Length: 79
Image 1 (tube, rainbow, N blue to C red):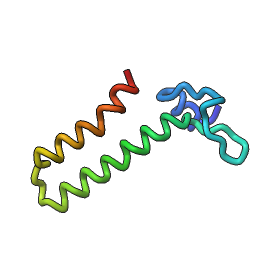
Image 2 (cartoon, helix red, strand yellow):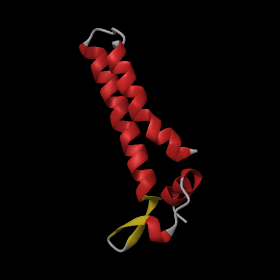
Image 3 (tube, one colour):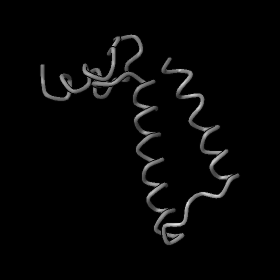
Image 4 (cartoon, rainbow, N blue to C red):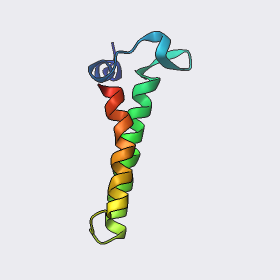
């Protein structure tokens, strides 16, 4: 077992029928976990970029509501 499989097994079930294949080999994360972690990564990048663009001003109320609404499906799926 290589290091990526060990890291992946800590955060994903790694079921073969739900995992993506690359060059005939199973990826360390299933398709669902890949989407979740990719989305979190891009959300963090957006958050820090937006914060820098607005000189550290907090989100407006509509932006905060939209952010909460976007996080809700991930929370429901995780439960």
